[in-house]
Length: 135
Image (cartoon, rainbow, N blue to C red; front, side, top):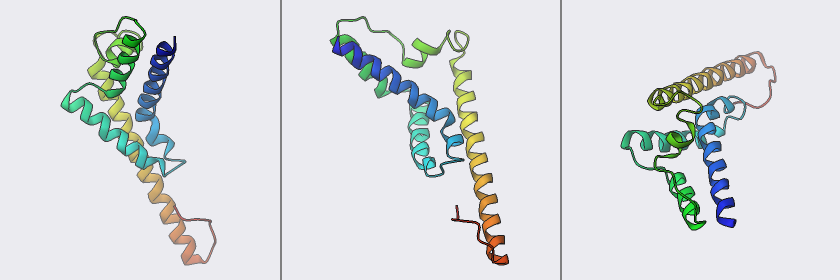
């Protein structure tokens, strides 16, 4: 029973990790220090896709399932849980490209917002206004 709970917890953690990968840069628009955590996750995810190795989260989930005496799925997490469920069967490469495109859009937005805030702060300094802490 405990092994199944651990496998389920790993499933949820993995899902949260993937969601943060796709949307984390957008969250950094509001909480800018998140960009560093997100950058690490982007590098990790890019390495997994480019080098084509198994995600450790998947391995840990499968380990917990085995320890609990349950059958282990063959493919990786994305192919097992998302392919054919969230998007059409076989469209994982397209979904990966969409995910990475959203990351790029999030980063472009982050840097545009950051630039505008710095520009506004600099203009306020010239005028002698107080606009709060600089970002």
